[in-house]
Image 1: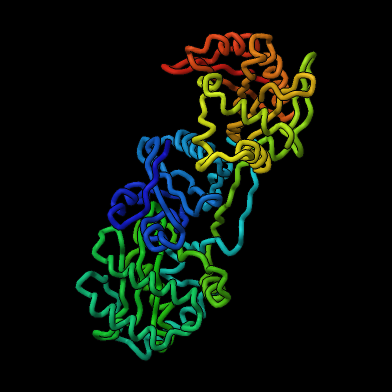
Image 2: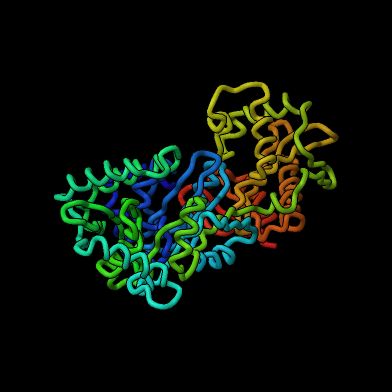
Length: 467
């Protein structure tokens, strides 16, 4: 089971070990973005299967980065663990900021996906050489702005910033705010505050800070980070009163710090019209897509309502209001359920009410997490069959329990077989899996009669029935 912890400055060195050689090319796969936006996005992280696994959002709306492997990382192993965590938590499996060249892997891995690619999310990625040289007709505007800047401030020079430049940086922020054009924009003010906090980390070896100075006055600055073959620009600020300062900063920074990089990522435009216009004028090589991918299961695609299944002796239907007393008695029979493998009471996370278990079953189907079939004999509820734990890859787990008064007559086997066949041939699953405690001889016999044994561990025997 994955255990996450919030991103903090103390974690930066660990994160950097994964990001320094990462060639996903998107700004989210960097220490700077993770630190700068960690509180806004609720970002947490862990390590699994030799990969970095990052998650953002809050319960019900969690999203995962695509795993970043270390030297011997197993991306599929990390994806398996992410899927298991989501099933344990009862939340959808969602990935966000998936690089374009990783989408195909997810398409092959998961049969059903909902995919989106919002224009506002995309990063502006440039060839480093283009920004360094500004060669050709399309960059004539940038060259003209730089000429005007150099005509007025011929001695201005770029140099690397360090912690010793903190006083100059503080004076820059005061000057910048004095002419800040978006002072009435809360989103812009919040971003400015985060940028100030990040500039206090200039001493970190993986951050590259560059400042354009007019004498001793700092008039523009950038903070960047090299990740694989991409130089990611996290912060880019300049005093607007210095005409032509932005293209000058862009060119000088690319020339000074872009060596060894093919691309420069100047991040997204956050839907800001001015930023979009400006970043397009620099001629991006591409607008790098960040795909949002939600894994769906067969229930969501194929099952609009719980059907009625019939066997020679039984009927399987949805649970009904009038079933609540009998259903509660079934769920709360501790002696009978010691082999069930799930603590129904503990799973509620709160006090037990008359409708508690019924409502859980109803919500699970509404969210397409599970199907709880009421097993009926002559209309009376005598047990349940539950198809659950859909892995998004064609498999789901099946469990069945029968009230003590009706045990020993083969009703469990009959109900189990009907639910398994429905899952395989109506829900379009590739396989139905099940397990039983090693001490549970009746369940072992039942599962052996309608499935094939798949393996075992210290606790369980495992079975499966493929299509």
